[in-house]
Amino acid sequence: MGHGGARPGGGRPKGSVNKATADVMAKLKALGCDPFTGMAKLASGLFPCPPCNETGVLANGEACPACAGAGVQPVPLKIIGDMNAELAQYVAPKRKAVEMSIPDGIDVRAEFVDRPPRQTREEWLAARERELGSVVAPAGAATGRDRV
Ligand SMILES: [Zn+2]
Image 1: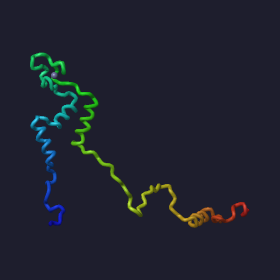
Image 2: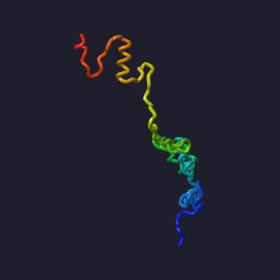
Image 3: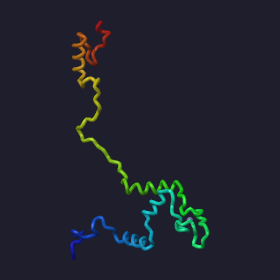
Image 4: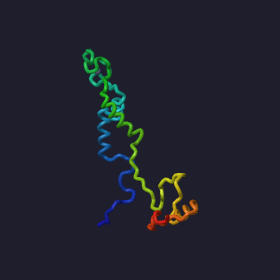
């Protein structure tokens, strides 16, 4: 008995289609159906009229009632929008939301120019005392009323 597991280099080459997809592609080709072209025509807003094959005239010589002889049929706005949205994904792939995180230890808080520098209460009291030339009561000490 073998040990199982994937063999190196085995399997379908990256980018190639699997059997089911290849079968569908072959069937569509045999029917003359190109879904991408169909979507592009719908996205344009005027779809080639199938009953008259874009001629505006039926096989019996009568004007095509489906397109009133125009050879094209107007596409509803909803379908035009849906087809354009679908096709846009091939032109510009949808962007995924990206999770952002900030590494630990990085301080991203905004510092404004008029914000005073960080200091302890003691540093602040000392600076204030220097500025005012008077003693400021430390936290928890008596209030100003007692110092009159
Ligand atoms: Zn027609």
